[in-house]
Amino acid sequence: MRIVVAHKWAADPQEAVVGADGAVDWSRARPAVSEYDAVAIAVGRQLADASGAELVGLSVGGPTAAAPLAAKAALARGLDSALIVADPALAEADSAVTAQVLAAAVTELGQVGLVLTGDCSVDRGARLTPAVLAGWLDWVCLAEVSAVRWDPTGLSLERESDGGWQSLTLSPPAVLALAAGAVYPPVPGMKDVLAAARKPIRQLDLGQLGLELIRAPLLLAAAPAPAPDRRGVVIDAMDPALAAAELVARLSHDGLTWEGRP
Amino acid sequence: MTWINYVIATGRPVEGLVERATAVGGGPVWGLAVGPAPVAQRLAQSGVERVVWFETAADVPAEALARGLAAQVTARPGLVWAGRTAPERVLLGAAAAALRAPVLTDAVDLWLEDDRLVARQAALAGRLWLTLAFDRPVAILLEGGPAQADQPTRASVEIVAGPALTHPLRQVDWRPRGGAPVDLKAARRVVAVGRGLKAALDLGLIEALAEALGAEVACSRPLAEGLGWLPKDRYVGVSGQQVSPQLYCAVGLSGQAQHLAGARTADLIVAINSDPDAPVMAAADYILCGDLYQLVPALTEALS
Image (cartoon, rainbow over all chains, first blue to last red; front, side, top):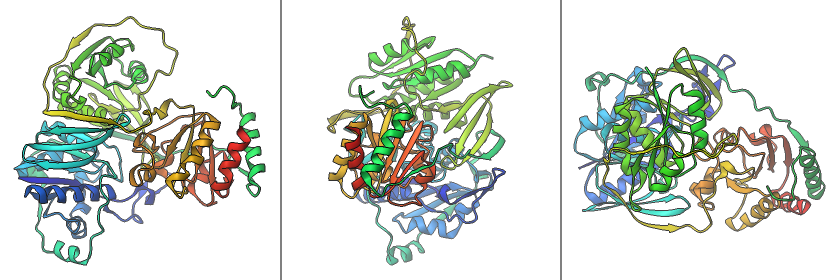
């Protein structure tokens, strides 16, 4: 059996520069394996060791997804091998398209019992890709999973839900999106980085998958988000009691009341 | 052709989403209720034209019915609307794949124009606004929540059974975490705390302030997901809760774009932080630069 971790080579949008015309400059941003994906890889490693499965990393994206650094960074985190679908047509892919291509690659790979993902991608953060991927595969999907245990009869899961802890069982195949805090992913050491250089990397051509990609929405306009319309009143906080009194007075003036506790 | 608007409900209030679908969708609004009977009964009174009910036993999570829901929407395609909780997202994703539909997330505003759905989308953690035009069908992830307007009590509409196609998934146990689940979206005041808090025990300070303000306690992501000091339903941000309170008091919280995007629509933001250069300071109405361990008790005192 194979366990696939779907991960993304992406930069933090905080590091992008948004121009006055809405153009985005990513040149100063450095892509990385996001911390959420590292969680999925770490959980995948544990499950692969427990079940004897092969742990395959699957990354879908624009040409940067095929950079040697991208695959090695993910492999150093404990994957057995890497599968990459990189194509200019996927550079701006949203959840719908990414999920469609991931599903086709999982099918092409074959013998996959489980797909793991992080909570969300760092760049888009839509938290929908695992759900749409499971839809394409017609597999069961669960999100915000905080623990997974493998046993021969199926999978046992834990997650936080409705203010409590839920224990679940399911039969593979399945797509699981892991909670960001499921594990603390270890930082790869020199040995892991060296081992990564010897692990197999395979590229799949998007054309080979024979997909008619979901039509992206038409972009009509882009603009920087309007600056928050905030007052920016600085209250001198040298004396905490005076500062507190001034804040309460200002909030009261704004119409907030403290009796009756709305 | 007439496009159906499907609104997915798994137990959380979706009246607000039904309102948006009715106002924007340009077609009849149907409810897709996934869960035990009360989920369908509530949805039947929310303003939808009819309810398709995917009944689940008490030990079957809503996600198990994704297959039936997908079959329903492909039988008569349309726009599918769902909120942001884990089961709502899974069901929406199943519908999107079944319809081969594009997905719309993080919409700030949306409307119909020339028979297309046009949306203003907050991209890049809320820093960039894109205007996008979608051909239907579309899968729309949008904060639902309670109704915006005062709604009259409605007569219940017809409830029909949906296709019973399930995935093999069972809940074997559920243990309360302690403390009732919180609906931050409904809170009129919120006190949010970040990494400026040194220890979990110090949460008492924040809780006292929240009580004096009549507010709910919220936090930034690291406190809920890394440190686990607060439950996840109290974390505000792009991937957490998105709130619109009258007052948002950010305490010891730097205010990264990913966090502030979750509180963007608060009426008033108060920032209490020792770092004058923290991003939250530039996004606040009232700024108190100093030690939260002195300022928070002083504020609690001033309120009581």
